[in-house]
Image (cartoon, rainbow, N blue to C red; front, side, top):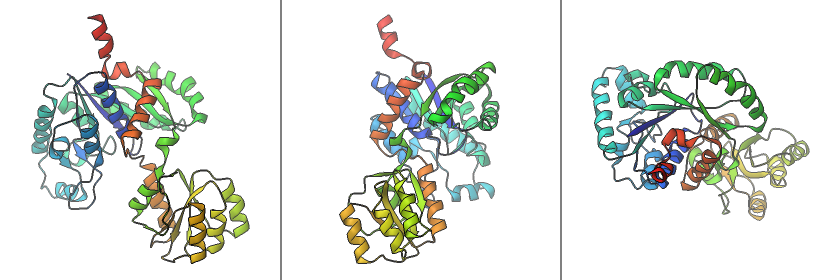
Length: 360
């Protein structure tokens, strides 16, 4: 059996999408594939109730007959971390728990895909970083990394050093067109000269880059003031803090954007609703816009969200949602699977069962 642990240099690198995409590719090739996420980190509350959708989606995509506590044995909540600091969590027992659940999930499998925590170092407080878990489960490690500038290489090399002999190699993800030439001509050859395998690089993809307005409203806890479609995807946020005429020129250059501004700025609301690239209005401060603005929004099929925070806080929270790159559904995984098949040496990671069957 092959065990592959997918980790990342930092949070929000597309690790979940890559994990589930590799698992589904292997599944579709006829392999018996299992999945595990030892540390659940997407939680609803500090008391440890998990809403981590990754194992639930994996269970659906791979037709797994396993309970959530088996797929995700450690709920890595703030309460858990506080208990660990106070000595209420036993690292040895946690390791045994993870190993026991893993053995049960892995029985009879050709491939086990193990998804890491938020980042490579998540879990260090109880000796369960992704590197620790790789050693515990005898897994090869795929490191997912972003790349925007040469300084990013420092973090990559530090992660490589931490993973040591368990590292299988690197996949770069969400690479902008402007960075591809430098990545291919300089960065990848440099890494390979140091004996570091690079399996490929995945370009930034619009379908994976943003968040639907419906998901954004849910994540922000916003009230939706319009009864219009909320399936459009938002990739960036614009702050409406200027005059109306200047705002209109600014917004007309935007694409797939949400405008965040005070609920009492009707001039900004009007300008945003006239710009085709603005997909959503997010109004702050608890002010409700006039019926005329809501009427215009309905005519333009532009959702209007309202949240009771200041504009700066709203921007920070909204950008955090988009940066998270959350894997939300089967379509997202299918898109990533297509990208991996085109851009990455998938056979080296999960094996080529079809080729093996042909040889036989």
